[in-house]
Amino acid sequence: MIYADNAATTKMSKRAIEAMLPYFSEGYGNPSSLHSAGQRAAEALVSARKRIASCLNALPREITFTSGGSEADNQALLSAARLGAKQGKRHIVSTAFEHHAVLHSLKRLEEEGFSVTLLPVPENGILSAQAVEEAIRPNTCLVSVMYANNEIGTIQPIAEIGAICKRKGVLFHTDAVQAVGHLPIDVEAQHIDLLSLSAHKFHGPKGVGALYARKGIPLMPLIEGGAQERGKRAGTENIPAIVGMAAALEETCAGMEERSARLKVLRDRLIDGLREIPHSILNGDREKRLPSNVHFCFEGIEGESLLLLLDDRGICASSGSACTSGSLDPSHVLLAIGRPHEIAHGSLRLSLSEETTEEEVDFIVQSVKEVVAYLRGISPVWRDLANGKKQFILS
Amino acid sequence: MVLYSEKVMDHFRNPRNVGVIENADGVGEVGNAKCGDIMKIYLKIENGIIEDVKFETFGCGSAIASSSMATEMIKGKPLSEAMQLTNRAVAEALDGLPPHKLHCSVLAEEAIKRALEDYCKKNGIQFEGIIPASCDSEDHCG
Image (cartoon, rainbow over the protein chains, first blue to last red):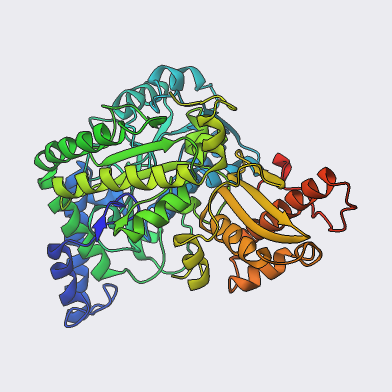
């Protein structure tokens, strides 16, 4: 099997699994318990928080553990909005191609009377910091812009946006779920007030993530109950998962530069190979994208059938975001960068990992070429395009 | 596979009756590229019997499988029988489709009925089938 869907989830690292195992067996105590079994778990929790904070250049108390990226996004947005409302600020700036965890939270806030500006995204998938600055009003309480897009992998000018927000006195949240492990994060240097991350995107376990919130920003608990996470998230802590996340994060941050350089070579080889397919287009800027991300549209075919046939050849890929697979609408990200519906339906996302080899990349290129040609051969849309009855949209 | 039945996957992987019939007696095309599905059916009809049928489909796995199954179900059948084809019968023959993919079987029924209607019109025959709600308009996406 060739796994090229690392933006959906990743294989757990051995080091993370090994770090977790003791906390299922002998280290099973509840960190809220005063006895030694509980205190052993509490020590693991303190250590994990410290190590995760250190990877982000944050303070341990600024890290709150959550069930994953979606919960962190929800909590960040709802908390910042509540704080803004107290100061009479009820306007939020974000972008049209955020993850649904952000977009749906914003929808909820709109229903509660907040006004939301969703900035349009240029065709290259990279927002300008100036556009963010221009959208900020005197009553803006929050700016939320993702670090790297989950579908097309484009990298946003986070540090610049952070500096603008700091200057204007507006809180800045970034959904860094796709960026962690691929791009440097320094919440001080990048002026980030709130940041979401998810362990299973960087070879950690599923069901655990974290929300960084700069000290002084009160978080609103989404789950009420005990005093865990200093009252910001009730429920007994998932110690094995938290320990696994800390181990995975340290590992991924330590090897980032070397891995990124190697991945970029593979990514560019994949892009060059797929660009040979006529009437196709690379989505998102060629350079300012995650080193792991390749995203194409192919005219005249539909993405799901492409995925299923690639799967038959042992290639695991994705068409847009896995979260959209239950829906028939094309990806909101592709529509946001201006792809017409009929083109957006024919999309393919390939996301690599450090285990990806050059041979695998070459096999993917060959397979995609063959499957696209086959599907075009049975497509009435392609026949009309090839016969000149309809005009090609992609050159 | 959780999403699709073995039957759907079989018809998707090895679609029956793919292709084009030159100078077909009846042609029907339905769907919209904007919605992500287009089906085109070609019929060869002799003495009131569907001698041959071919299809072309732009769409997801269940759209290709539905076209394939629908063509199998009418091949060699008299026109009167082909006109009775329903989307439900296509979906059942595929051992079911996920709820959000049922429109693919509707599209298959409609494409075949359009092709039959085309044949009837060309030959001055009263068309007796019922064309289901149109899938052509963009309002029907999803």
